[in-house]
Image 1 (cartoon, rainbow, N blue to C red):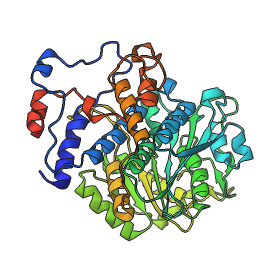
Image 2 (cartoon, rainbow, N blue to C red; image 1 turned 90 degrees about the vertical axis):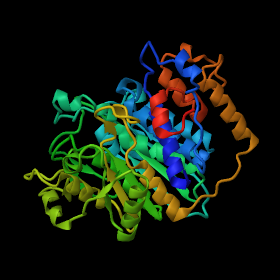
Image 3 (cartoon, one colour; image 1 turned 30 degrees about the vertical axis):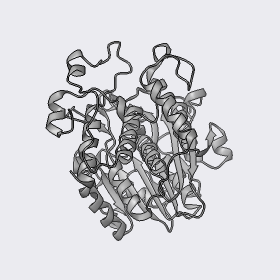
Length: 447
């Protein structure tokens, strides 16, 4: 193998090892037969970039873990913990605006959507991470972080609500992408913004017909409370553009219309720069991580017109073009910057080799490859402190007694997921050991 192909073969092996079994009493253990046949490691294909493959797998695993975690273990406060953990690995800084302070700090739509549950860990918040040099181009990533979506007062039917733990998939993917950017040391001045809320139902929940005011003063009439993601994203987008970044990328599980157009496996992307769109399309094909551009067709903007406010949050009176009108709504909050909006499923609806049912990173590798092409990498050898941290995390991943990050064994954790999130990142390639002999032989990397 050589170059990119070798990396893809090794990454395929890694993705085939993934499982999400933290809430199962019986977990997969390497069998005696597997151990005897030594299917507990990988023979690296010649030419593979081990660090790049490992970091990419870490990003995808993190994204999958966060999405698949049930909402009772993944409230806005837990998403904040996830950001803090990723930041600590890369010496990034964080700051957060929580609860009613969102009003004081002028994030009114994040507060409005999340105010139905202001209790403790469930309180709405705007999460922020910063990393990199002020001398490098500014890159801002935004992820929709609705940790559970009932639909609000326009409540979803039970069948549509069943997997709404995945409605923070955009935030999960952005955290995975941010980890990959920092691990690979791209030459960017990175800012990550995650508006995170629960779209819950209570006496003070926002209502159909309400008019909400965004951070920039633009008013939105609520046509449907189940179109809440674009509202919290709007506040974050305005905040992003205030610093005039070189590029803004957002990821969001925004519309069902996007899935009707492209199915569940292909993210829709909207890009306001043709050269950037062409690069993204090319990198998508090169990395076998397909995304598909849809148009920001201005003719559909008329469907968002309101008689009482500057704009409506949904296109009422038409059942068509929902992904486009949602993107057009978001575009109203993007000013004078290049922008990529990704509307995606974030969930495998069925299991396939390397892609088990559950949370999924979709388009993450295409986005990263585009950014690497635009900005390049400044990778250097990690210092001894980073090596020490990696060794500690690896011991924790293997389940050795006394996790050095929290002082507890894996078995003692109330939630094993939290142990992995807080104490077993980065995930080490060497401990992924659930590969069958046939799958290894098929890839030509197991021996």
